[in-house]
Image (cartoon, rainbow, N blue to C red; front, side, top):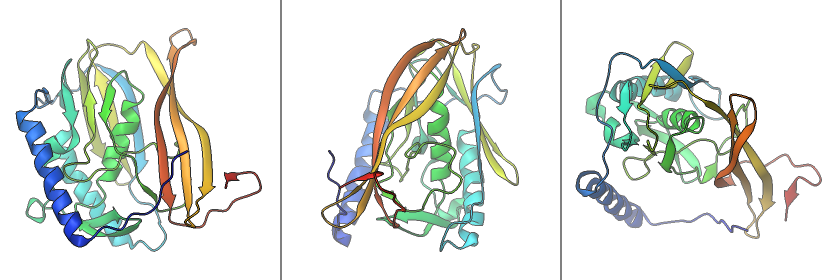
Length: 273
């Protein structure tokens, strides 16, 4: 059983913590032994491994729509930094190493940023939609997610949810990164684009996929904590299904625990105390 309670840190602790973790990440990027994906190819690889799309605009409670319109601008800038990147065998894809620091002088606007259980306007806000998309797509390929951070707070109630709770990846430059390792014999390519309504993504590869993947949740529950709040939990699992329809593997992926920032609508028997 995981005991989660909101933590309040001083402004000084937050500032120095960010400096420390940011510096540590730079040391890893430039002094570590990983081979990072840096090559691009304008031509898409032949085979599609998985594709997905997410809506660009959603009506969220108490969130001004201008934040989401600015998010679209931010996504457009970030996509140009990673679209068509090649991930060769033995290489690691690093979300922030390719995108770089979101800054106003690069054209980024203020969008919605989740912060300690709430939201505020921040430069580059909304880029979590892109990291969420890439993480979800990667779970449907043989690629290996080596670094991913779950959201600590569940800020908004489910609205037309089509994916399991906790199937995204939060991102904070540069220490909360999304990293993906290619331990296969094939080369992969990340392709991204937008239209007026959706953000689209694909993982493509040099070989035709021999399996498909099904990501599902188990042990979903809501607990009422002794400190008075509610926490949402689940675990994510993945089935690999062969071309003949048989299940080849069924593996545990990760667990999620998030403090709920809204009052859950609970019925009898749906939560633990």
